[in-house]
Image (cartoon, rainbow, N blue to C red):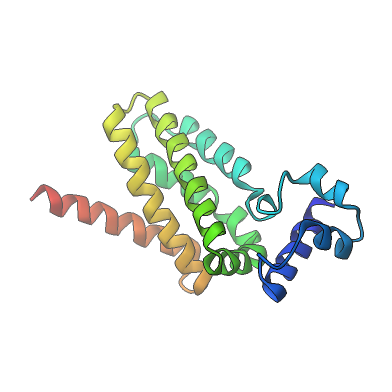
Length: 182
């Protein structure tokens, strides 16, 4: 039911726009009551942001399980790469989701808030591994920016692959940091 509501909402947001679609209309088209809709999602925005908790759990678990000798950026990109198959499997939903969010200022703002919260969780996970506060925060913020860039570029064009885009972002970020040291 949850997936059906998400798919229905996404279809309607694409057809009519997010602001012109109500939770009641989504529920009706999905063949359920509005009450059922709200049992699954606290509001209509969350139909598009439902996977954030799973993403956070997967990333923080991967950070916690990373080998001890890895630096903060290596640890983060190892975690980002661990999501590859999940993200690739979800691309048919994620691409139109991204398009709806990009066209809707309130949703774009929500996306930024969710990304900021996820970034804080990554920094906390790095700190739990013994990374100094400032290094953990800077690594999480720059790593997340590179991850978002790679993911959005891949959603816009699937070639090169997500894995290749993550590798490109990782190497570009490492090169940038090396040049900053000069």
